Length: 437
Image 1 (tube, one colour):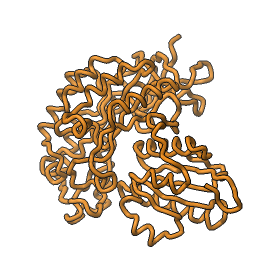
Image 2: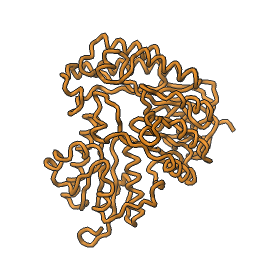
Image 3: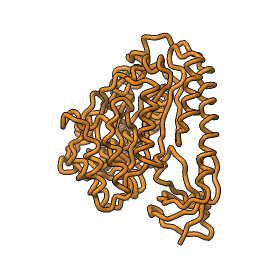
């Protein structure tokens, strides 16, 4: 593609939202470079004359960030240092007509499954021989592996199916090829992601097939950690616990968003599970995979949530003692089932409830971290920052979980390598230690 002045195209890809979007951006980057087009990710040097914004449309704050970013680059186009602005991703999928009307300065909008059309616009071909290949935007030693796209779950509050469509599993042989290629290029940690990991395989193999996929990935030479994110509790395939317990390179870690603990709210949210069954599942997971770290996310302020419902959530968190926990205030999303209900919990109440849960979780996290003082843990080091080597244990995912900090003034470790670290002190969200030679 040539732009005005016959200037050679240089594309900058800007990614907003979750790790699944990041993978999509990496695929775009790989395809563009495979077509001989100069492309970069999150390049702040103003060298690119074409910008692709991969948007998020999950909740109100994310939508606003995406719109602000689009407007920023539209302004850059008006100032002349960007020639073309293209928008793709979830926001574009969901609100394309509105965006085209409100921000017509964008050169073209694309949906979440319009990659071939986006490439064609840039005078590039979708190269099937690049399937299984991926240029990383993360540090080389870890990579996200998206095993499926879309979601078939009927959760009342969630707009993801509107943006990502129905569940489609990626064939196992494609994932194995991609994982082997990543391992050859130095990736040591695979982070499995999807809208719903536990539904993997139903469309292709007529059964939940995550356990078999995990077993095959665990056999790949060079992969030292495999991490599971975004498991769904209802219909959880218990056979994956046996695989997790069997293979030492599958992290004793599970991200399982539970959203609420009140049976009334779980029913309103269409989660397909009760509090009792949830607690039974968590007990089973902890019994079958000892020392597992469980991360969850919750939502406060869904329509019709009473103080009693919130107290049940608080009691649940207190009882279950999650290793990691995040919380959202409810966002009233158009075209979801919950949107037909009155958004009757005031925003200040939503925030107060979220703050209460996080205060409780901070106490729990402080206690759990203090128990690790004196232990020796395997740590993967991600970077050097502020006089410390910064890494993670198998119980921590990048960006969202705890970190291990080791003073860099008298100790050395290579970024992207593992080391045994003796934990000497802790705070609510971090561990401090020293490397054992």
